[in-house]
Length: 146
Image 1 (cartoon, rainbow, N blue to C red):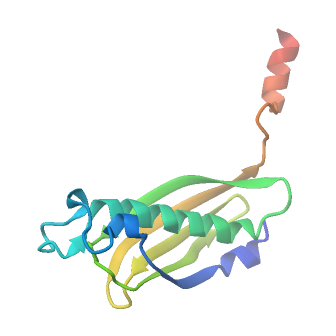
Image 2 (spheres, rainbow, N blue to C red):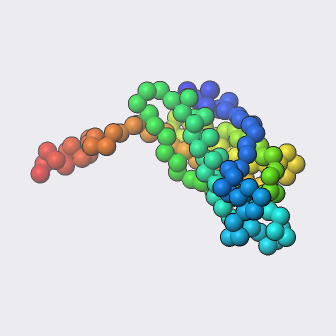
Image 3 (cartoon, rainbow, N blue to C red):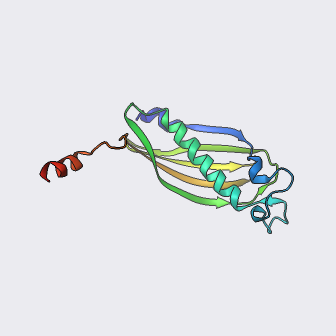
């Protein structure tokens, strides 16, 4: 992994929640937050934002890998969450907190420019890319002794 390039990863980009989550003018009842007086979208949005942030961090780190390496998520920790206002203009922001030869840890957040809606810590492991059916050296030794 190119450590210097990975340590400089930072993104801050606009994001719009998919209509299916906010249901156009009327979000699904199961997604509405009572705490927000029916004006905010809760549980489905949080899961979606965490997945999008994780995906963007993986995509950003992938550009720092040598051939034959792949990325595996090892930790996704939700640090803070608040209901998202309907039709809010959101931003996705992330940066690398720590990087070494085999992993990178990101701080990531979805926010509306003023307040955070979803803040997560995402740890990603960099490992050799094994195709399905490939055997590790330990598996080959086990097969040879059988």
